[in-house]
Image 1 (cartoon, rainbow, N blue to C red):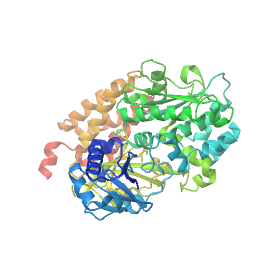
Image 2 (cartoon, rainbow, N blue to C red):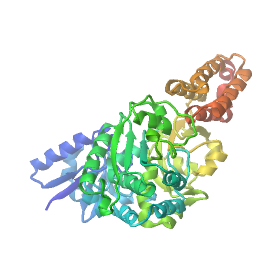
Image 3 (spheres, rainbow, N blue to C red):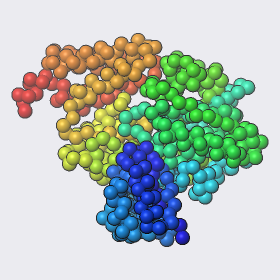
Length: 518
């Protein structure tokens, strides 16, 4: 009887030694004369346990982690391949509290299936949504997605159904789907996890988007820093094309949709949709003025639906389970689930998919487990390098779009970076200006010049030079960036700077006075 063992091929697990663990398991099994099959699956997202090896025993997956090559012999001695007890045993994978508390819709298959196997994908419910969509008119698909309440998961939270209807209604001889997988925010990895662990759900979502809008060609634009994701997505596209999931006759529907993978050159600003479209066209990645919107004039001047990975990966669930099923998750106007990525100085860093509505405190303290070094949490940054810094006094903020807007923050790509009480918020604010200065495409004056002046202002504050006047100047500069920038890169830089100044004013006092007070 063949024994199945699962070792992640996810980049995070590989960075922690998963390839060496897989090779050692294969070698040790051969020495012992055991018949094993090593399945390289995606990660479950419990990164503090990676590399996490799973053994299938009587239909139940038992987890062991974090496993190093030196642990493999003792694991076999304990009979781990059939679920034997060992100090690294975490018990049944699905019962690990971090995983058991989640509501996994988008990531339901990630870490479970072989990402290279379309049959494995189908066996776990894949393609049901696309098959449903092939039997519907474009208008019916758009109406279903609209009714589900799905909003863009890339940061802006714009209703997906409205965007798709705009593309559908736009007259053109050619339309496109552009998947924005340029995941550049600090503390984010959900897009990469999907591309490496469940690529067919993204392909399925893009195909449904094509059927809904009348687009026959799609592009997935991702980062050069994601070589494994690019390789796996290219392989999955070829498999999907041969199986008739893509091509001139999608699943025998008589409707066409095909796609290809495009690699960017590592510019953060290409995460902005119009910069990404310029890059796709072979041009320099700079922001376009809007209007016209990409839904009217996008790639090569044609109507283009630009959606984030998490948005498109949510669509198959909606088409499979129905709009009402998806809409019932969440709170207020934030429907469905959100893939929260918890990183930084935190004990249990990883991906946690949950319905909108959990308090920030629960995500950080209960699920994340507080800081890794045991020091008190002082601040968290939510929404990437341009997200606001939240003090502990705001940890009761509910994780949904409206609550974060009211708290002068943004969810963005749902990355949470945790900082302990040693963090210097003046340095963090300066980093925001520096980041914007480096990553700006240079097209608009506020974003090109503003952050450079911002660094100079914060340097004067650090030197104790007329602090109150400099703080006022920094806040005024933030307002100029917010109102005058062409895109969110400059506009959102105000969030980390203003939140640092307003929520941690003590860090902006003159250094000499602060040291004396201490």
